[in-house]
Length: 394
Image (cartoon, rainbow, N blue to C red):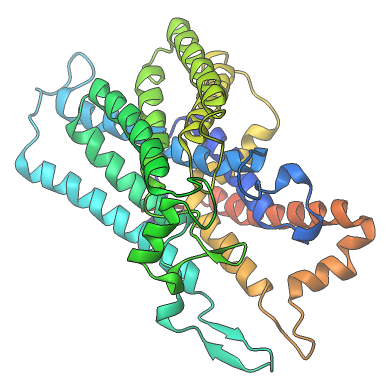
């Protein structure tokens, strides 16, 4: 992990990534979750809201970025233009270095996720005393951990399998996942207490290391449900391989848009048998979000990279898109500090700000305004770092 002044990425991808990171911060910074607009909150269990679209989109973006990385590595060994140096063949040393880089990134992301789950390492009891959080009560899985596992596994698949094989494997994974849910979950495969995904996590990780959903030990970023989440990354990878060949071709964009629309419709129809459920990351949810991501990404590519048009939010979103991991870590760590019970009343500072300042605008509107204010605070940091050409790379 290092901070560097070098930066070279596709503009449309940065805008897309910046949009998702921006929405992620807003959703996680509501002034009062009891007064959050429905579209800015996750579905309680089965169902779908715009907020449920955010996390799978980030995984999709990871896949698109991997396709660019794959292209860069291929160009390094094949040459890309006339007059270039003779073609080089990848050596065993370069292959090992590539694998080591994948494992290193996976380990760092997973470790950062564990750190976030443990921070700030202590809590206040009902009596007001501060106690350290024991290791055996730290949640093992989480958002960054899922990104790490999905990135690591998908990178290996992309390295050793053809695009056709990846497509077949992704399809088989989604079909198999549905079968596992129905075979292993009894009497209700999609029940919060009876689903097989939760049973596996409780068995392998123990209830103390699992997030509690509605008071029940169940992890929405669990081990089994990571399998279909990997398909979101693979969907982004295949989309990037299809689209990001320059010069951009309108026929490829149209082909991708049609594929995205087909996948979206397929996911919606499949949801009548396999309900949309982000916390279980069902097959219908995977298909629906991949289809939506393909269509949204193609729209951004066409607008920015094909038409060359500029729009006001682009520069704003670019700052988020260039430093996604750094700003995610900053927003999560700062929020945990603001939510820590403080003072004699043990009222968190973030709750105090909502009650004393933002709630005056209305309970729901005030909650949104506080989230937007927090997002702008985070943007100030990434804007400053962008001015200094400082970007966190893992």
